[in-house]
Amino acid sequence: QVQLVESGGGLVQAGGSLRLSCAASGRTFSGYAMGWFRQAPGKERESVGSISRSGITTYYLESVKGRFTISRDNAKNTVYLQMNSLKPEDTAVYYCAARNTITSVYSYWGPGTQVTVSS
Image 1 (cartoon, rainbow, N blue to C red):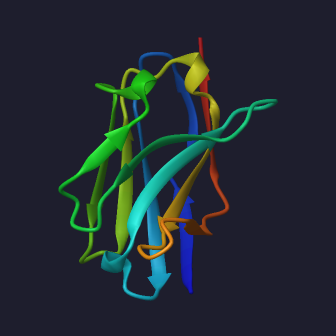
Image 2: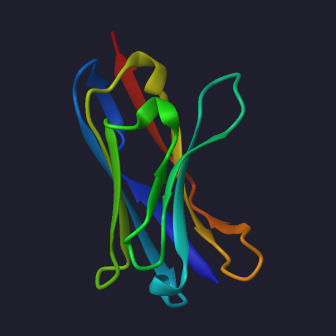
């Protein structure tokens, strides 16, 4: 089992920045690739991006490339989502998730943190 808890969400004006954190406990954090997802009201959940177990490889949703950065600190069991140049369309609940390396399924999820970007 892996327990995940996101933090750092809030209300920010367009053009501003936020850094989300996802703290993990339980099984070895470094053994999991991690992903960030978001879900806006009335929309399906979408993948924002992911980071490999080592932190070397990252992937991003096209619409956030150049604005969002995912990083991780395996010593602190934490993954981060740095969000810059925020837009109102980034408003959503943001979730982190841990991916099972055998099945490639995101098996563990945090409860989410709300990000609201005002225009």
